[in-house]
Amino acid sequence: MNTKLQELLDLRKQHIPQGPFNITSAFIREARGAVMIDLDGRELIDFAGGIGVNNVGHCHPRVVEAIKDQAEKYIHTCFHVAMYEPYLRLAEKLNALAPGDFSKMTMFANSGAEAVENAVKVARYATGRPAVICFENGFHGRTLLTMSLTSKVKPYKFGFGPFAPEVYRMPFAYCYRCPFGLSYPSCGTACADYLEDFFTAYVAPESTAAVIAEPIQGEGGFVTPPPEYFPKLQGICQKYGIALIIDEVQTGAGRTGKMFAIDHWGIAPDIITLAKSLGGGLPLSSVTGRKEMMEKPHVGGLGGTYAGNPIACRAALAVLDVLYEDQLLQKAEVLGEKLWKRFLAMKDKYEIIGDVRGKGPMIALELVKDRNTKAPATEETKKILASCYEKGLVLLSCGHKSNVIRTLMPLVITDEQLDKGLAIFEEALSELTK
Image (cartoon, rainbow, N blue to C red):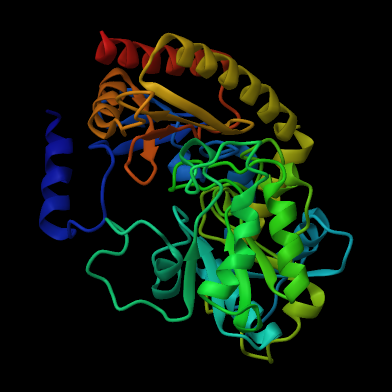
């Protein structure tokens, strides 16, 4: 083993607690586009994207240029103390890009969890109600409230209770494993209609401030609802004056071939949260919502010392320029078509692949021991990911049973890198299923 690598691993073990998990044993020397280079000089094709953070790629030149330019002017003043233009310009752009023909306002925070916390605060203040409805398999963060909203117990919630009150969880539109034992489309999207029954059995609509959902569940396994789902859900929310919050932390900024994944369902949520790829690698999140809702909280009720840091805002403005001026959204659609074609062909070839789902290049493969029983192939998934890493490909799992493999490669990935990465993945898949 590289002596420097061993030194760093020893330092990590000595000084860092075990809680912050490491998916690989790699220490990265540099990264560009869709490739990371470790201390040994080994190239790793990146299908993880920093867990969905690097949609425009590692160290995109225009993002780096924006960061350097801003750092030479001022790094931090705190927006609450002395304002600065990048915060305003970024809010202006996101208000224009977010779906809906109504007036919007945007505020910034540092992480996806912070964005969700603030979205819930806005919804509660605007409605005067306490309750929030979330979903099974959902993931919204690791702070007290967002951990309470998150579904999976281990590793995210175990031992960290008690949790925040007035959080209620209902089944999601998981067609491959329908919680109601039905089949789409004959089900009539009963999972959305169930919200009406949920009000009777768990929490009254008059007490409900918001329903929060990811358009495609990230950590939950890239669970992707059918076309009718969100329009139905929104209709019920509007009926009772409940805010619909869409968490685009992982799905936004072009990940599905659209700026916001919810555009695939053709609705305009009341509030949208965005983070991860928005900052191009810097910590930044946003809450964009209806003007009348966003204006409700009193002066000083929202914000944070580092929220909307000027360097992060400049990086985000560069990210948006790259997405649109370099036509990355269109490139993402093409990338998605290539991935879908390859993965569906693999599904025909390998029985272990039970389901392929997602939107655009945000795709996942659910691995099962048997297609009839759908028993999760959790250990097999671990072995495939380990084999891929040994061969030079970084991939992530997700899902309630950690048996789902997801693709979060940068949208700037080259055809050569993509083909090499897919070849490595299929080789690992083939070796396991021989």
